[in-house]
Amino acid sequence: MTTQTLTAGKNQVTFKSFGVDLAGDLYLPDDFDATKTYKAIVGASPFPQVKDQIPATYGPEMAARGFVYLGFDYLGMGMSPALPGEHKQSRYTFRLIENTWDAVSYLGTLPFVDDIYGLGVCQGGSTIASAAVTDHRIKKIALVSGMMAADDFQWADRDAVNQQIAAANASMQKMYETRQPDYVAPFLLTDDMSREEFIEVGGNPMVGETYDYYGRDGVKGPVEVPTFTNMHIGDQGMQSLFSIGQAYADKIVQPSLTIYSRTAFTAICSAQFVEKLTNEHQELAFDEFSHVDFYYKPEAVKASTDAVAAFFNT
Image 1 (tube, rainbow, N blue to C red):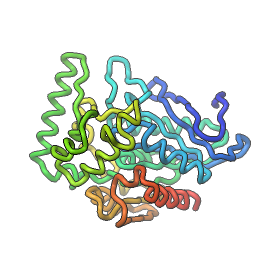
Image 2: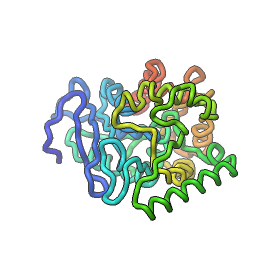
Image 3: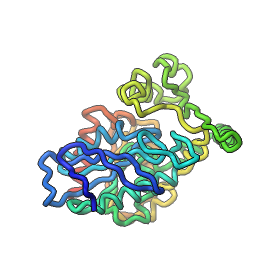
């Protein structure tokens, strides 16, 4: 049981995972009363985000709709430490799942928490879907712009994939031998690039919206969020090719909601996931929003959080 005094709004909290304290923000409804019980949400953010990005947007929105919401920095990210002997900016697929399980355990210690749900955005969608496969303490899941299906998205160009793997393998070997971090820009976006520079090298349909969120001059880039950087451990390419959520979609038993843009470059990642589901499921596809619109644009965030709240409340 927690001994911390928690109040309405944003509360800074920590919880244990892998033996260290992960940094979290716990958002509570404006009329919060510790003697009552609430439905709680564990949030999962996109790669390579920290809790002051998606969780800082979705946390207040879900709290305003009457939910408890936990956003946190994964192991080695933001304000959460890396394990001894390891490096910061090391967001690894299987650890994301285990961190999520521990976040659920933490919420379970709070006396005012009733049912627990999962809400993941982008890579967070895969994280939540994967965590829910064997964690039935999570009663429902909602996935927004989710990257749950990776095969036809990430593995279609095998030559490019093999280059990605080779670079990640070399980075891992280098770090093992030198014991020093090897930082790269996984999206080719560095912290000091201009929008024009990134568009020139970005090479995919999402470069503009990616920069407008993550870039130096973006709404949630390294200037606006000091704990965030676009630079990441170089072996990340060995992690991002795994899509556990897609592989185990037919094993998910909890009711689920998938929200995505039908016109987005990443739409296939949600659509193919939905095709494999055998559970009670709802799908909500929009034409007017892009993948990144759901990160921060008011109309898209309202559409997704309204739908999520209605789904979790039924």
